[in-house]
Image 1 (cartoon, rainbow over the protein chains, first blue to last red):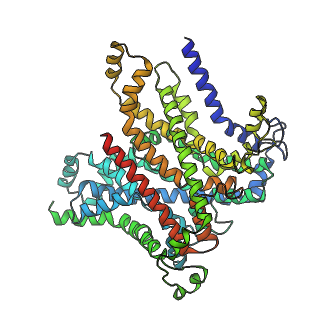
Image 2 (spheres, chains in turn orange, red):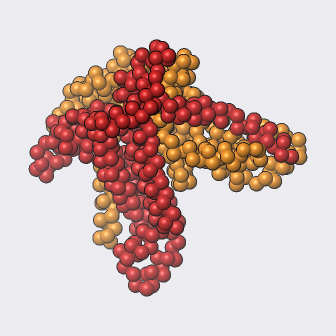
Image 3 (spheres, rainbow over the protein chains, first blue to last red):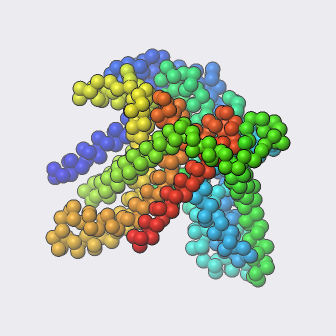
Length: 270
Length: 293
């Protein structure tokens, strides 16, 4: 019994400690200027105000950055899912010349950190006129090796007989992919979609490099920029953090099951 | 379906993803490697003809660059302290949440996990204020037990530990999930057999849990190490690499050289040293993994 009480109090205290930064963030975002800079720190806004959000959206045009983040994360996710599912399916169910070589090349390339590509990628996209456009974010997010492997792994478990049966009925390869494989692969597709959406939404280094205009910034870049000018405005910065974090928390809570399963599949790289 | 038909279909399915990966990943990797042997700088941006091969000069310069060594030292400091800490905390959390005594597991798991999905830039900003020397929550909690206020992010000795604490908070939930999966894969009868033979809880942990979790732990060490090695946003937001470069990371230095000063040849050489270190780390871990199998 004592052991049980000890464990529970430990769990409750550490859970609260883990969540304290978020509680303070939310509380401070609803305070007037200067109200969060007090000692001891307070969590409940008194009086409650939406001023900070008004400043963000009306004066600082953060809605524009919110829109950029939402649009880019959605487009990247849709294209990413399409590209990787096609390639993953091909690796799982088709024979072709160079399969082994290509597979091993991709496998060993997973070790290359994306930072290595950034300098030439910047120059390449610049010469194409894509820097500071949505394309600069979409193009590098089109496909990655990790996604292809995860889909391949999943598709291998789909019985060949299903594919053969569809082929007997006269389905083309693309129809088989579209009507047989994709519906069966929905769980893994949802998992990858969350990773892609959250990854694009939360990404910082590449958007910081590839986007150069306030109006093109994604939320994290806009927020980092705002921070430099408003170091002394915790209330405003907390409102900005809330706006940035809330959408990812909603996506996560709605699709938690798939996200957790994705991690448990054991080999997820952020 | 014969081989030829199969091949045509396969190439059709592979074409989009493979072209994207070849043009926007492999090509840049090769280009970066070549670039690291050139003096590619701001003038080259305007006139590619001005680029000259300097062979190993960038690498030689790198080994003579005190700022690079500072960044390297900071990065190792960060990885060597934060990774084991994060793994330890995740294992502890996983063990607690896997215990049969605990109910409402989902709620606890969720609260530990929430920081993982949140935007790093946003939480780094929150923590900047949490570490505020006058009004921050950390100093308030410490004042309750009589500790004088500390200027966490403004002092060269505490800035890195402060960033480490924040990073462990941000990411331990991720490894916790993998550990829970690992724990659930350990067959229950192993523990039952040990209990019959009168093993204590600690003995069971030491001779069943730890060895059975070894593959999971190695995997987690690997991804944690690689992930932490790339840290950038934390110092960028919280300290800008300061005070006195005490939190400057390798990726941050690479970013500054490449995209602030446009010394892209030099920056590319940093990128490859960085890649080389990650590769060595990965090979060591894989070797350990082989030897435990």
